[in-house]
Length: 235
Image 1 (cartoon, helix red, strand yellow):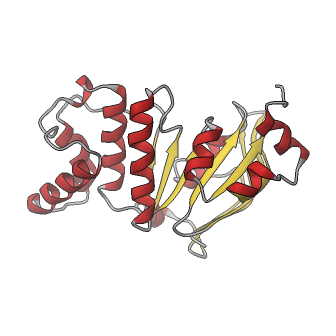
Image 2 (cartoon, helix red, strand yellow):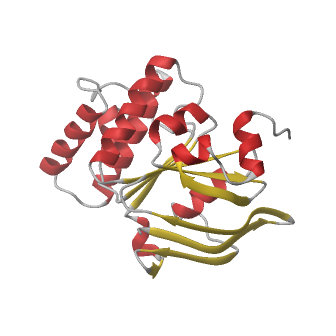
C-alpha cells in the first residue's frame, strides 16, 4: 500500500467537495477515478499530490502521515498542460535544476524522458509552439524526469486527437511497467477499461465503489455505479 486516505473531506466555503473518502492505493497499480463532472475527482487528485490539504481526515503515505517530505515523491500533470515560454529541454529540466542535479545528469535524464515520450529531436523547440498532444507529452516528461513514486494525472487525454490518445495511453502503461504508481481521473470510460488495474467511482464527493476494473464495468455492486457506467445516471 503506497497511499491511503482515511475519512478525508474537503470544503471550499459552504461547498463540500469530498465527503469522508476512504481510499487505499496499491503500489505499482494504475487506478482510474471516474465520476460525473463536479464529483470531486480533481480535488481528490490535488490532495493526493499534496497540492491541497484535507479539511478533515488523514492522508497516509507508506504508512506514515503525509508531510512536506512526501511532496517530492509525487508529481501531478494537469488537464491543460502549462508550458514555460522556453525550450522543451528547459521545461523538462526545470524540476531537476531546482533539485541541484549536475548538468550531465540533467542532460541524461531529459534525453531519456524525451525518448520515452517519443520526442527525440524536440529539445530545442519552443514548448509553447507545440501541438496540444506534444505539450501534454512534455508535461508528462517533466513529471517523470524526477522519478516520482506516484504520478497523478488529471484527464491526461482530454480534447486530444485519437492518435495522441493512443500515444499517451502507451506512455502511461510504460510508466506503470517501471513500477510507478499511477492515479488518473478520466471521463473516458473506455480509457479506464483499457488502462486501469482498478477503478474507483466517485459521485457528488463520495466514493461509491472501488474494485478491479473488469468487475466494476461488468458486475458492479452498487446500483449508482451500474447506472453511471450504462449511461442511465442523469445529473
